[in-house]
Image (tube, rainbow, N blue to C red):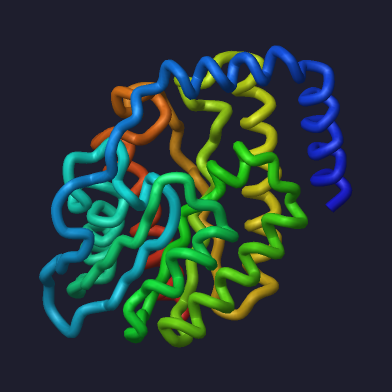
Amino acid sequence: MAQGRFGLRLASNASLALGPLLLYQGRMVRRNTPQLPGAAGPSAGLVDASGPPLHFLILGESTVAGVGAATHADGLAGRTAEALAVQLGRAVRWRAEGRIGMTASSTRRILVPNLPPEPVDVALLALGVNDSLKLRSPERWVADLRALVAALRERVGPARVFLAAVPPLARFPALPQPLRAVLGLRARLLDAAAADLAPKLAAVVHLPITIPVTPDQFCADRFHPGPAGYARWGELLGAGMAQRLQHDA
C-alpha cells in the first residue's frame, strides 16, 4: 500500500509538473488516432470439443468490443475461448459484452443490467485502460471493481471471476513521451491494486501479463491489439484461467 501511495504521488507530481504538455499530447493523440469500429460478426459462439460446454462471459472495454479485430472470433473473446477450450479439453460457449470507453463503474451501470440473466461458469473482466486515462485513484478503482463483481454475480450467478491485467500503457506506440510514461505508471498502479484485491474476494483471480508487449502486436491505430496481439493475449488468458480452474477442481 505504501508503494502504491508513493507511485500515485509520483504520478500526480509528474502530471502537475508536465500538465500543459500532457494536455497537449492527449489532444494530439485523440486527434491523430484513427477511430476504429468494434469487431463485426456474432458476439457469441461455441468452441466445440467433448463434454458439456463451459459457459464463459467476457466483459469490458474496447478490447472486448474487438477494436482492431475483424470479427469477435479473432478478437479477445474468441481467442481466449479457443485457448481455454484447448487447455481444458472441453467445449466453451462464449459471449462478449464490451463497449468502447467503458470503465469499471460504467460497466457495472451500463453493461451488467443488460446481460441475459443466465448462469455463467466463468467471467473475465478486461478493464483498466479508460480508468487509467480518467486518472482514477487505486482506491476508487478497487471500490468500483468490488461493486462490479457483486453486481455481476447478482445477474449471472456465482461465477468464478478473473481480472485481466490492466494493459501496459507504457508500451502503447500511439502515446508519445512523457504522456506514455505517466499513463504507464497509472496503469501499473491500478493493476497492482487489482492484484492485491483479487485474493480478498471469493473466487476472484488476477491474471498478470507475463509476455512482452511489442509494437507488432498492435493494430493500425497503434493503441489497440491487432490479430497477433489478441492471439497472444487470448492464449495467455486462456492458459491462466484453465490452470486455475484445473487446480481448484
